[in-house]
Image 1 (cartoon, rainbow over the protein chains, first blue to last red):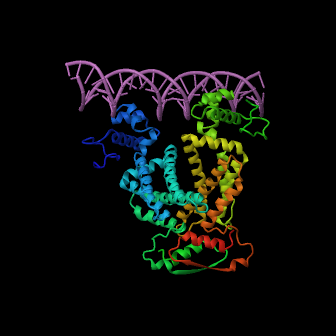
Image 2 (tube, chains in turn purple, brown, orange, blue):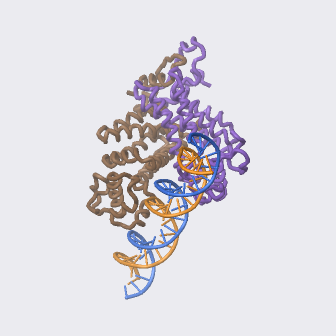
Length: 241
Length: 241
DNA sequence: GCACCGGTGTGCACTGAGTGCCATGAAGGG
DNA sequence: CCCTTCATGGCACTCAGTGCACACCGGTGC
């Protein structure tokens, strides 16, 4: 990448600034100055010094300029999922796929934080973000459906796990964004996804040796006790930190 | 215009067709005839015989006319959750709240099926529906957050469970809608939500008597076995059908 | 030199959603 | 009877998004 262009706060057009990046930069400067709805597309193209028609050549709608790299990230995710093998533990695989999204956010912390503050305030952008997140969730669910074919309630299980993974990821992502990018994003998402993996039966770390997988664990539970408590018990007993 | 019922297929209660209902009826007739995007607001108001300005008085946007009763349903849900007591098992409570939504769909099967076919084809409507679903999910998550205060990872757990409940509900709802409303919606959603309840530790049926809760169950599991298999074992052992 | 490209950026006119403002007209209460 | 209130309708306006045609530019063949 050529420096940190495309992120707001950078206005130089020196060497390789493409028109698309210039539009994103101009748009964010105005969005942050006077707000999203108070900024028209004409304002953006005027600041970027390009024609109005060109804006819509690069971005199908005004909202798209706020999420310039999700399309690529979604393609990365589907590619990552397609590149897996049958040996992969399915839940672990989708968790790793979710980590790709977090990494994209973490690549550009200031940009991500600014965008977060924007989407939090503007309902239209929130709706747009939901549709983006929905496509990620569908990608995960489709992968899991494929891996769960034949299992009892395979489709249901796939949809539920995909939703849980996305929710956990977003939970970690949002808390990181609220910290203005100061917290450790990777650690937060690892924790959140670890929670999901424990819940949905992924062995968080596949058994290292062959012999350990034959060990036997005995759990005693009171009938009527909340099942998640029993699961917690199992988690710790099975060695999950 | 006034002879046409409020919702396509059903108009039992109101002798007096209100303007809002007339607009919904006219809109759906046109949407189904020539498609959503091919229908302008002017077309709708012309068919309904009212002024264009009145449309936007009742519906803030063209999309809102497709989901005329979600606002009320959302209010019902928040009311239902607020009416609960501390004795309620939290997961069961949010599952019951989700059932309210299904019930709203099931009240008007033909209308729901038509709308489903519409939203499936029109990206803009899908995005709108996502924002509606998101508000339901937030309502559930907020309730759970309140119930989980003090618990380890309470917020995370609340968000994940809310997402799982919504996903399971939507899974059942969609399969019912795809059956053109012929399947048993209640049974489908019971099955899907039962799955979630089992996974997240709600005792699907609270212990009936006091004595049963002291029974002891022993589970033997191989270390390294998928946790969800162990949970399945637990489910059947604990007596959940 | 010429004609002929495809790709990229632009200008223009148009549709359609959504908004603000004000006129109208029908209750309804004094 | 007037006066207020409220629901409605009409009008003009902004702005997002689209279709179309034109201009510019580097390259290719003749």
